Length: 193
Image 1: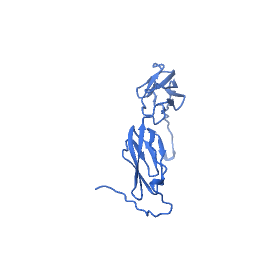
Image 2 (image 1 turned 135 degrees about the vertical axis):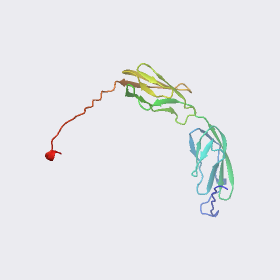
Image 3 (image 1 turned 60 degrees about the horizontal axis):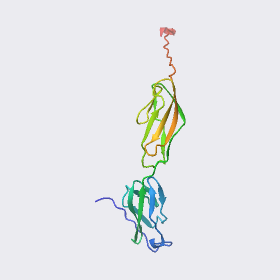
Image 4 (image 1 turned 120 degrees about the vertical axis):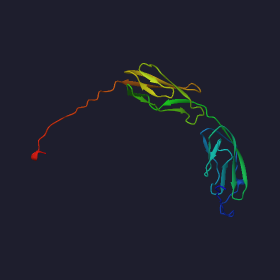
């Protein structure tokens, strides 16, 4: 039981080339990185023996998905197969960046500032946050900023790996008052309506 795909083609096609014409070298990637295998997708079938290490598309794009070593199998229309080792290592953190340099919010308001661990496919995405003045701006473990009182504070994000940092300046303001009015009136219409 299950789903299967059957592909058929004539081995005598014009321009058909066998795997013996291709040179395959071992592939080294880091998580999130990709490369392309130089084969004709019309006459080749590409498979990964471990999708947790790398994935491969019909067009020959190989992407590192997790640490480890796995095999890429390339088959031609004659059933010939070549196996290529693919080694994927964890990408090291090289920095961290907030999406903006400064932001403002009101007391009692909260935001989650956008940031990116560099490179975005780095293996360790863990970060920590610290406020320069907790009486102005409170910061939770998961990066939620909460305006406490009027003033300015700096929030620093630090990567767990490499201790890379970036700073965001936050201005906290008192909310502007909102005035509401209720108007009541009496009007007289024709026919006492």
